[in-house]
Structure formats: structure tokens, C-alpha cells
Length: 377
Image (cartoon, rainbow, N blue to C red):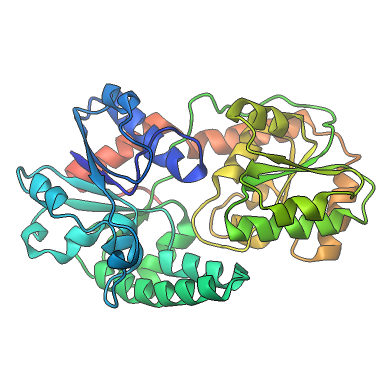
């Protein structure tokens, strides 16, 4: 089969790559011969991918003003590539497109009879709408608004194509089925590291933790909100992640018990998650599923979130959900003095083990691709 990836799925150093990479590993273990096509915009060739793929082809993404279009979303138009299309037309293998980003071929009549599947990482027009709401930059707001409108029209168009859509959560599936009217939309859980097993972390952790890619405006907004919230709480807060802005670091500076840790190594981040007493993960986007949430549930103790973080995921049973500032404050104060119990870890283990089984989900994906079978909802 062909897999078209919106980026080079290695190294696995941010949330968007987890599902891409660990899906390759799981399919390879099921003896699927993978022809991987990926867009390289800085990562370079990655020999680690060769052990899972029969071949890996790299394409340059067309970035900058030349990739803007009034008809196609930027994330799609910048990945429009004739070499990719010609390579895919050399045979009749099924094609899995990773993300709406890679779906330009659905607009090409030459692929009308091919077996195609789209992996939905988000409902993209809604994701860009949330980026618009979170941004403090006028220029960025204009871009996000324009892209969201283009994406809505585009996603409505591809939803009418003869292709299957695989959402990462039931909420996104329902939007594609009930609002965009896709003919075939179902759920397939994320593929995660095999090393992620629910940890036995009974007892007390040492601090509260927010982690994420802090260069993303929505994440910076969440971190800044928590820093201000914790200014009135007598407990430590650690904010950790990639590329925090000087503005965010300045906001934390001088506030007792609050620190920002920039660009921790993966091992250090995992250590911080396991040593935290509460992982606090508010979000301003309610599409997709947050890898940082799953990381906290597998590898941490108490998890406090707001409704958008768990919307449509089915994971709310494993979290403490609250949507007001006062509610968040009260929940944090109560949990900070409450030990994490063995029963909570057991419940997570049972719940997550059924949902996130790479081998089982790979077999389900193979059935959809080759036999046209549907997942049981």
C-alpha cells in the first residue's frame, strides 16, 4: 500500500508525528509492504523509516506566497506535487492519505477508481477556526480565518468523494458524517508507543505540570492562563515545552513557585510527567485528540482538563473536567492533597488498553483497506 504523509514522520518529537510513525511500525509487524511518500520541509531523509517501509520517497513542500491559492487551502495547495501523483499512478495499490493536507489527489479524476482512505487528524476547518480565536496577531487572524473558510468548502467537497475517512475520535467522525455528509466515516484510535503502559504511580507527586509545544499560540495562551491562575495558589507549577516565547518566560519570572522549562529532552519531559502530582491540560480546540493528554494518562497521575480537551474523545471518565477559572482552582487545590490511588491506575489500564492496542488497530485498518470492512462503533 501507499501512505502519503504530510511530513516526514521521524524523529517522533511532537504530537502530530506519533500516529504517523507508530502506524508504520504496527502495519509492518502485520507484514504490510509500505510505500511511504512524505513531504520534507527541513527534517531531511530519515534512515530509521527504511526498516518499516519497502521504499521511502521524499518531496519538497512548496511553501511561501507561491503556495497560496483562492481555491485550495494552503495546507493542501502547498503539497500539490506532480511527481507524487505520477508515482502513485504507476500501480493500483490502495492509498492512505495522512491528513486533509495530502488529499489533493481526490480532486484528480485519474484516481477516481482507486481504493483511497483519508486519516483525519482534525476537522481542519474547525481547528483553524480555533486558531483564529486564540491568536493575538492581526496578520495571523486574517490567515486563519481565510484558511478556515477555504478548508470548510474543501472538506465539504472531499467528503462527497468515494473514499473512506478514519477519524481519531468519535466527535470528528460525527462531524464528517452528520455535517459534511461523508459517505463512509468511522473511528480508528491513535497509534502510540508500545512503551506507553499505564504506570503504577500511587501516592504523591511533587508539582503541577502543563506541557506542550509552546510555540503554538493556543498552547501559549493556555500556559499564560495557568501562570496567572497559579499566582493565587500556594503550590508549584512547571510549564514545559518547545520554544516558549520571551513573553511567556517573562510572565513566569518572579512569580513564586512557577517556572518555565524550555525545550526539555524527551526523557526529561517524560520524567517531569511521571513526577508531577497533577497534569493540567486546558485546551482551546475541541477537534482531534491531544497526544499530551494521552501521555499524561498513561504516564502521570491526576489529570485536570476543560471540556474542549476531551470533547468527542470518550476520555472524560479518566480526567477531572472543569470549565471555569474558579472550578479549576478548586479542583487543583483538592487534588493536590489527594494521593493518586492504585484503583485509578487499574481503571485507566483497563480503559486505555482496550482502545489503544496497536496490533488490534492495525488489523482493523488492514480490514478496512483490503476488505472494505468497517470498525465496530
